[in-house]
Image 1 (cartoon, rainbow, N blue to C red):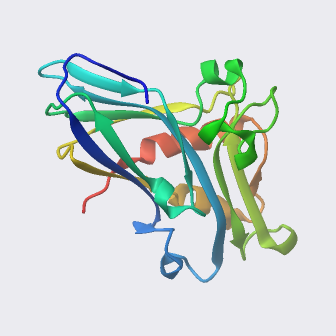
Image 2: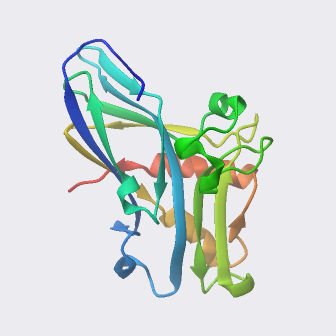
Length: 214
Protein backbone atom coordinates (compact mmCIF):
# COMPACT_ATOMS: atom_id res chain seq x y z
CA UNK A 1 0.00 0.00 0.00
CA UNK A 2 1.41 3.38 -0.99
CA UNK A 3 1.21 6.18 1.53
CA UNK A 4 2.41 9.74 1.96
CA UNK A 5 2.20 11.72 5.19
CA UNK A 6 3.73 14.43 7.32
CA UNK A 7 4.11 12.45 10.54
CA UNK A 8 4.93 8.94 11.72
CA UNK A 9 2.66 7.51 14.41
CA UNK A 10 0.97 4.18 13.71
CA UNK A 11 -2.79 3.67 13.73
CA UNK A 12 -5.63 1.82 12.00
CA UNK A 13 -8.77 2.96 10.22
CA UNK A 14 -11.76 0.64 9.69
CA UNK A 15 -13.58 1.82 6.56
CA UNK A 16 -16.83 0.32 5.26
CA UNK A 17 -18.97 1.05 2.21
CA UNK A 18 -22.69 0.26 2.16
CA UNK A 19 -24.75 0.46 -1.06
CA UNK A 20 -28.35 1.24 -0.10
CA UNK A 21 -31.92 1.56 -1.32
CA UNK A 22 -34.22 3.68 0.86
CA UNK A 23 -31.41 3.77 3.46
CA UNK A 24 -31.25 -0.04 3.69
CA UNK A 25 -28.30 -2.14 2.53
CA UNK A 26 -28.83 -3.95 -0.78
CA UNK A 27 -26.56 -6.71 0.51
CA UNK A 28 -29.54 -8.14 2.39
CA UNK A 29 -32.30 -9.72 0.29
CA UNK A 30 -34.82 -8.72 2.95
CA UNK A 31 -34.34 -5.05 2.00
CA UNK A 32 -35.03 -5.42 -1.75
CA UNK A 33 -38.57 -4.71 -3.08
CA UNK A 34 -40.38 -7.74 -4.51
CA UNK A 35 -40.49 -6.12 -7.96
CA UNK A 36 -36.71 -5.83 -8.03
CA UNK A 37 -33.81 -8.28 -8.10
CA UNK A 38 -30.18 -7.23 -7.87
CA UNK A 39 -27.80 -9.83 -9.28
CA UNK A 40 -24.56 -7.86 -9.59
CA UNK A 41 -23.13 -4.82 -7.85
CA UNK A 42 -19.49 -3.89 -8.44
CA UNK A 43 -17.73 -0.58 -7.99
CA UNK A 44 -14.16 0.69 -7.87
CA UNK A 45 -12.92 2.82 -4.99
CA UNK A 46 -9.43 4.30 -5.12
CA UNK A 47 -7.04 7.11 -4.19
CA UNK A 48 -8.16 7.22 -0.56
CA UNK A 49 -6.94 10.26 1.37
CA UNK A 50 -7.45 11.58 4.89
CA UNK A 51 -6.93 15.21 5.91
CA UNK A 52 -6.56 17.18 9.12
CA UNK A 53 -6.99 20.78 8.02
CA UNK A 54 -5.99 22.30 11.37
CA UNK A 55 -2.61 20.62 11.72
CA UNK A 56 -2.25 20.10 7.94
CA UNK A 57 -1.51 16.41 8.42
CA UNK A 58 -2.59 14.19 5.58
CA UNK A 59 -2.15 10.69 4.26
CA UNK A 60 -2.98 9.27 0.84
CA UNK A 61 -3.22 5.75 -0.57
CA UNK A 62 -3.01 5.03 -4.28
CA UNK A 63 -4.49 1.53 -4.17
CA UNK A 64 -7.73 0.46 -5.84
CA UNK A 65 -10.44 -1.64 -4.22
CA UNK A 66 -13.25 -3.52 -5.95
CA UNK A 67 -16.50 -3.59 -4.00
CA UNK A 68 -18.34 -6.74 -5.11
CA UNK A 69 -21.72 -7.96 -3.84
CA UNK A 70 -20.63 -11.57 -4.41
CA UNK A 71 -17.89 -10.96 -1.85
CA UNK A 72 -19.39 -9.12 1.16
CA UNK A 73 -15.98 -8.83 2.83
CA UNK A 74 -14.84 -6.54 0.01
CA UNK A 75 -16.98 -3.72 1.44
CA UNK A 76 -14.78 -3.49 4.55
CA UNK A 77 -11.28 -2.02 4.24
CA UNK A 78 -8.83 -2.01 7.15
CA UNK A 79 -6.12 0.59 6.66
CA UNK A 80 -2.90 0.49 8.63
CA UNK A 81 -1.60 4.04 8.77
CA UNK A 82 1.75 5.60 9.57
CA UNK A 83 0.07 8.62 11.09
CA UNK A 84 -2.34 9.27 13.94
CA UNK A 85 -4.19 12.55 13.75
CA UNK A 86 -7.63 14.10 14.22
CA UNK A 87 -8.58 13.80 10.57
CA UNK A 88 -11.67 15.82 9.68
CA UNK A 89 -12.27 14.75 6.07
CA UNK A 90 -11.93 11.77 3.77
CA UNK A 91 -11.49 11.84 0.02
CA UNK A 92 -11.83 8.94 -2.39
CA UNK A 93 -12.31 8.34 -6.07
CA UNK A 94 -15.19 6.43 -7.63
CA UNK A 95 -13.81 4.51 -10.56
CA UNK A 96 -10.39 4.36 -12.16
CA UNK A 97 -8.64 7.63 -13.01
CA UNK A 98 -7.47 8.46 -16.54
CA UNK A 99 -3.75 8.14 -15.74
CA UNK A 100 -4.25 4.57 -14.55
CA UNK A 101 -6.30 3.83 -17.67
CA UNK A 102 -3.53 5.06 -19.93
CA UNK A 103 -0.98 2.88 -18.17
CA UNK A 104 -3.02 -0.19 -19.14
CA UNK A 105 -4.74 -3.06 -17.33
CA UNK A 106 -3.21 -4.23 -14.06
CA UNK A 107 -3.36 -7.20 -11.74
CA UNK A 108 -5.15 -7.51 -8.41
CA UNK A 109 -8.37 -5.50 -8.16
CA UNK A 110 -7.75 -4.07 -11.64
CA UNK A 111 -7.30 -7.45 -13.32
CA UNK A 112 -9.75 -7.77 -16.28
CA UNK A 113 -10.69 -11.20 -14.92
CA UNK A 114 -13.10 -9.40 -12.58
CA UNK A 115 -15.30 -8.40 -15.52
CA UNK A 116 -14.77 -4.67 -15.05
CA UNK A 117 -12.73 -3.92 -18.16
CA UNK A 118 -14.15 -3.24 -21.63
CA UNK A 119 -11.21 -2.72 -24.01
CA UNK A 120 -8.08 -0.57 -24.10
CA UNK A 121 -10.11 2.02 -25.98
CA UNK A 122 -13.02 2.26 -23.54
CA UNK A 123 -11.10 1.25 -20.41
CA UNK A 124 -12.54 0.19 -17.08
CA UNK A 125 -16.14 -0.05 -15.94
CA UNK A 126 -16.22 2.08 -12.80
CA UNK A 127 -19.66 0.99 -11.61
CA UNK A 128 -21.79 -2.03 -12.50
CA UNK A 129 -25.36 -2.76 -11.40
CA UNK A 130 -27.37 -5.60 -12.93
CA UNK A 131 -30.65 -7.27 -12.11
CA UNK A 132 -34.32 -7.52 -13.02
CA UNK A 133 -37.21 -5.12 -12.59
CA UNK A 134 -40.83 -5.66 -13.62
CA UNK A 135 -41.07 -2.19 -15.17
CA UNK A 136 -38.18 -2.75 -17.61
CA UNK A 137 -39.27 -3.21 -21.23
CA UNK A 138 -36.40 -5.57 -21.92
CA UNK A 139 -36.07 -9.28 -22.42
CA UNK A 140 -36.67 -10.99 -19.08
CA UNK A 141 -37.05 -7.49 -17.57
CA UNK A 142 -33.26 -7.21 -17.24
CA UNK A 143 -31.46 -3.98 -16.42
CA UNK A 144 -27.74 -3.30 -16.82
CA UNK A 145 -25.94 -0.14 -15.77
CA UNK A 146 -22.26 -0.21 -16.70
CA UNK A 147 -20.85 3.25 -16.00
CA UNK A 148 -17.38 3.96 -17.31
CA UNK A 149 -15.33 6.01 -19.73
CA UNK A 150 -12.18 8.08 -19.35
CA UNK A 151 -11.82 9.96 -22.64
CA UNK A 152 -12.31 13.73 -22.72
CA UNK A 153 -16.00 14.59 -22.53
CA UNK A 154 -16.91 11.14 -21.25
CA UNK A 155 -14.75 10.86 -18.15
CA UNK A 156 -16.83 9.20 -15.41
CA UNK A 157 -14.15 9.14 -12.69
CA UNK A 158 -15.31 11.26 -9.75
CA UNK A 159 -13.70 12.36 -6.50
CA UNK A 160 -15.74 12.60 -3.32
CA UNK A 161 -14.81 14.59 -0.21
CA UNK A 162 -16.76 14.10 3.03
CA UNK A 163 -16.43 15.66 6.48
CA UNK A 164 -15.84 13.07 9.21
CA UNK A 165 -15.85 12.94 13.00
CA UNK A 166 -14.88 9.41 14.04
CA UNK A 167 -11.71 8.39 12.20
CA UNK A 168 -11.38 4.95 13.83
CA UNK A 169 -14.54 3.51 12.26
CA UNK A 170 -16.12 5.01 9.15
CA UNK A 171 -19.14 3.82 7.18
CA UNK A 172 -19.87 5.48 3.86
CA UNK A 173 -23.32 5.07 2.37
CA UNK A 174 -23.71 4.72 -1.41
CA UNK A 175 -27.41 5.46 -2.13
CA UNK A 176 -28.60 3.82 -5.35
CA UNK A 177 -32.21 5.07 -5.39
CA UNK A 178 -31.46 7.47 -8.24
CA UNK A 179 -30.32 4.56 -10.42
CA UNK A 180 -33.41 2.49 -9.66
CA UNK A 181 -35.58 5.52 -10.44
CA UNK A 182 -34.34 5.22 -14.03
CA UNK A 183 -36.28 1.97 -14.32
CA UNK A 184 -39.68 3.54 -13.75
CA UNK A 185 -39.95 4.72 -17.36
CA UNK A 186 -39.35 1.17 -18.56
CA UNK A 187 -37.06 2.19 -21.44
CA UNK A 188 -33.97 3.50 -19.59
CA UNK A 189 -32.78 0.17 -18.29
CA UNK A 190 -29.46 -0.22 -20.08
CA UNK A 191 -26.13 1.58 -20.26
CA UNK A 192 -23.32 -0.51 -21.69
CA UNK A 193 -20.78 2.01 -23.02
CA UNK A 194 -19.33 5.48 -22.33
CA UNK A 195 -21.68 8.36 -23.08
CA UNK A 196 -23.65 11.30 -21.75
CA UNK A 197 -25.95 9.22 -19.51
CA UNK A 198 -22.99 7.42 -17.95
CA UNK A 199 -21.42 10.79 -17.15
CA UNK A 200 -24.68 12.14 -15.73
CA UNK A 201 -25.32 9.17 -13.45
CA UNK A 202 -21.70 9.04 -12.30
CA UNK A 203 -21.94 12.68 -11.25
CA UNK A 204 -25.15 12.00 -9.31
CA UNK A 205 -23.60 8.97 -7.61
CA UNK A 206 -20.69 11.09 -6.37
CA UNK A 207 -23.00 13.73 -4.92
CA UNK A 208 -25.19 11.13 -3.17
CA UNK A 209 -22.37 9.57 -1.11
CA UNK A 210 -22.52 10.37 2.59
CA UNK A 211 -21.31 9.28 5.99
CA UNK A 212 -23.79 6.74 7.33
CA UNK A 213 -25.06 7.31 10.84
CA UNK A 214 -24.72 4.16 12.93
